[in-house]
Image (cartoon, rainbow, N blue to C red):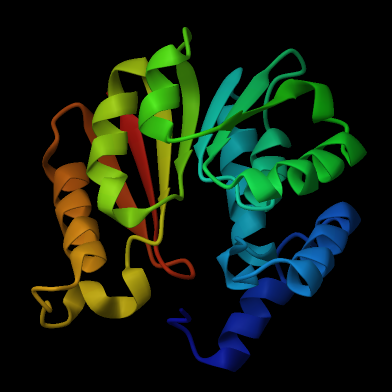
Length: 213
């Protein structure tokens, strides 16, 4: 989803930090071997995630939706030297692919993979988090928020992806479209919940940054 004219978008990308070589390799192999490679965060959004993480400098990060690990590695760039990132995904077939690239990075020993439903895994994580990235199945976004909000430290950040949902958030809602309805409900929740302050950024398919008060 691009909201700027292509030539202006190209200028934005050209004047932003370049994509690291390891992530270029991960992208190439994802497009060669994995279904739905469009699910990758991509180089520009990846640099945005990296920058937010570096500004926050979190000790603990939680990611919901690993896919092939691109965003995981971007977020890891900003965590403290003794920090850790816990990433959750339901796709067993991607675990080895993710681990290969995690171990190629300098953060491999700090990245903990969890296989299963995030709603089952989150209650078992006996820790709190400074940064949470939500990029999983849209119908559960509201449920994910309620599952993690009490595990988010004061001043902690929630980054939520796909909150513009291909522009469908401003179209007439199809009653059968559960994903768009879920995104609309989630965006309203982020706007109205008094425990957080939120700004929605028109980056790619929409990226919301929420800070716990």
